[in-house]
Amino acid sequence: MCSFEWGRLYITSREATGGRSQAIVQCKAFARPIGPAVVRELFGTLAHHDGATIAYLATTNGVTQGARDWCKGKPIRIVTPDHLIRGTL
Image (tube, rainbow, N blue to C red; front, top):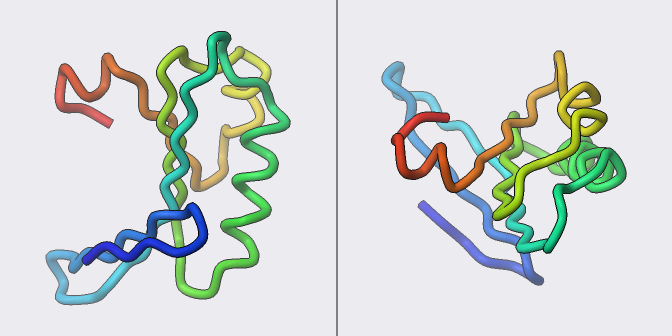
């Protein structure tokens, strides 16, 4: 199930166990790779959203190594056009 509210897309899916999970998806079409500030902001949104357990950052030009390092160990997944082409996350 998807819902749209104030510029955010909320996705709710049913897991194989029958439970529900919610994810936050943020899409960025920046000319340059995204830096740590954007992923920190997304993490803050995730922390304050009741029910969301993971966040996806979809970007057209990838992220910097600093942003990638900041995401380590956190429930944030980076999605690039390559992921979509290969069908992997």
